[in-house]
Amino acid sequence: MFRPAYPIRTSRLTLRPFTPDDLDDVYAYQRRPDVVRWMLGAEPRSREQSRASVAAMAGEDALRAEGDCLTLAVATEGRVIGTVELVWRSDRDRTGEIGYVFHPDHGGRGLATEAVAALMDWGFTEFGLHRIYGRCHGRNDASARLMTRLGMRREAHHLRSYRFRGEWADQLVFAVLADGWRAGPR
Image (cartoon, rainbow, N blue to C red):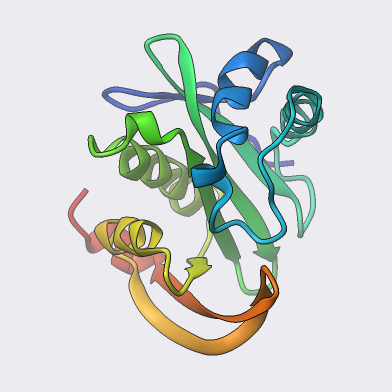
């Protein structure tokens, strides 16, 4: 089992497992249409759906086996402002996938970049990943910019590769290798 030494701290943020006390903060962003706009199959959540989401995320506090997801609350000033996750995609290839969701009211200050970078750093330095990738909808410019700021390179632009809200959609894939992460500016 692989688990970070909690909490993971950055200069402005605390990354930690979710608890039931995070419901109000999580519901504040999960209920917003602009938050779920680019998420496959996601709709704004009710309070009860957010309660179930928090309970599920609270159980994702370690990587026990390939396919597991490590999901952490991103908190600042005592409030949860988002979620970062690292999915263990391949043990043999030492590959993981990042994901993130943030409350838009906290955008524009580099907090998402800071949080995702902290989790990726753990993935490379402590967990020993060789490669971390991320995917986003082809029109999700904010997500693509975030991955670029993290030093990830765009590896693919899959044209009309999946169904999204009843239409064919493009998907962008970004990635960074461990040696590139260590060499890059942080």
